[in-house]
Amino acid sequence: MDRPSAELTVGQLSARSGVPISALRFYERQNLISSRRTAGNQRRYSRDTLRRIALIRIAQRVGISLAEIREMLSSLPDDRVPSRVDWQRMSAQWRAELDERIRRLQQLRDEFTECVGCGCLSIDRCLLANPDDVLGLQGPGPRRLD
Image (cartoon, rainbow, N blue to C red; front, top):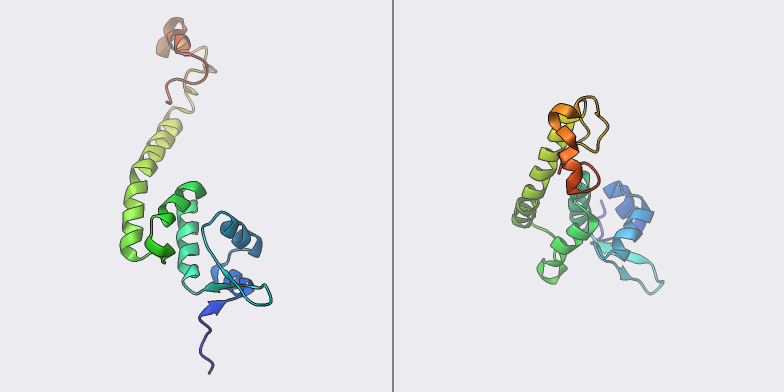
């Protein structure tokens, strides 16, 4: 049985990671992953790139932007692959942001039926929640959901 190569082609990386080739190229343009070029100008990725892609996909799934992911990955020395400790540090830093998003979504869910945050679409009910449209003095748009 042949030992797997230390490097993967873009097709192999796509198949192993489940990420389309176009997305891998995009990730590379965004400096999230890197490759080396062969003499024939073909991309080759280290196997460690699979872990980077998994981290990127997980972070994206919970709503972390690619810019934030790139910033975190760039903090790793020598572009090394993220370790368990690195992931724990990254996720701890993102936790406060995620907690705030969850809080806002729960607030939106709980108040969605009654009010869209005094923007105001609940005119018949806002006499109680926003008498004389006092929240309108704070500026345009929803106010109670900020």
